Image (cartoon, rainbow, N blue to C red; front, side):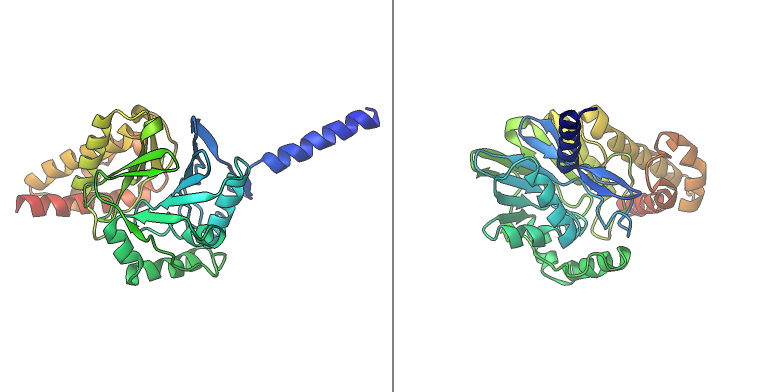
Length: 319
């Protein structure tokens, strides 16, 4: 190979490396994917936050407008938020105009700190209860938890809460792009918003939607409410569905599997409860019905807790 050809090849290799994604050794490579017109998603690891993945586990997303960028859920730490901005810059140099936070769980919104540091005028939107919680003890717990789970890699991460409260059904216009807020609380939490990008018929589910991963329900949540919101979204006939964790896509690919899981669990636990069986007995009897979900990250650890949570909700509804 002559020197000129070698130089061209070397330049291509360097260019490819520069254009490539964020590499987490032993975990994977992560970059923003264009899932439709001006909509981009970086699908994070499905494992829980840890040292290897630096606490990164959600699906940060952005919409590119004429003059800027609107982010949905910038990630779990200041450092992850900085990396999200670095990956956005590989797509566009436009400034961040606004951020939507889907709910109170810190793996989705602690990256706000990095966004505000780089773009102080960016507006951050969230559910009114999320704003209240993020500014209280619930918000303060998350940086400490991430620091522990990442073994110190998230050091310096601080709470930067949303400032702008959203109403259900509200339409926000940002630089020519329209966003509609949906929520039926409680669901995954009592702080959830689902963000619809009207122009592309894309809906960001937050952790009301999981795909290839299981998640926990906190003390404010309702599995029955989660079923209702996913049934509601199914009937909206959106083109694209972006779960909080796992692959995005059509309703059949990215919404229906988790909805089916919850509906199936609801039916099985209700039947067991009415037969006066304890939750641990119900778990043993029904787990074989969920073979399609056994490869979802966290299933073996979380399934019993899901049964217990559903059992308590059924008990409360039928008491």
